[in-house]
Image (cartoon, rainbow, N blue to C red; front, side):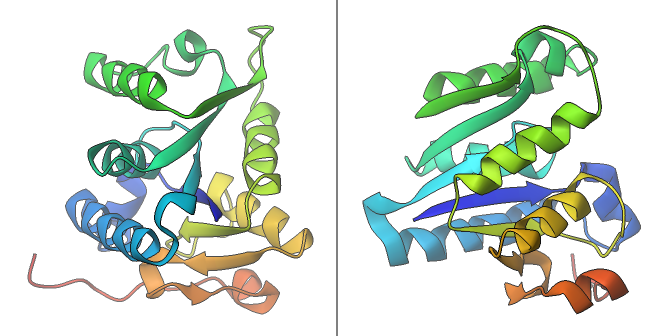
Length: 181
């Protein structure tokens, strides 16, 4: 079973009442559920970005679960403005990846390349799990729109893996307030 992952950067979760720690816990629970269900047949497609991609990548490494990395650019370009720790995390995840796909090897930066990367991730997956806070713009939103246009199932990790259909995508979604953190 191949599962594509898409999600926001850490600051987007703070605006939606989620802490990065709570999102990591949700990601860990989801990865464990899929591992129990699919065992060695499980493979995640990850984008290597700061936030959800790296959090799920870390969980996969710790639990010895296979994953492919889909980068928009060569690592040194993708991580050019990242912190030293974020670059180190990407490098470590690349070393443990079962496969690495780079959308643009030329070094030319373009925001369009991120969507191309997402399309390849989704095309190579059975379905998409999105860590979506309800924003109707940005990479996660565009990834969900693309997956639905390709007749792929999309599930919202922040809404108990509830399926997302075109109507929910158009309306957006308001995450519940998380308390007791």
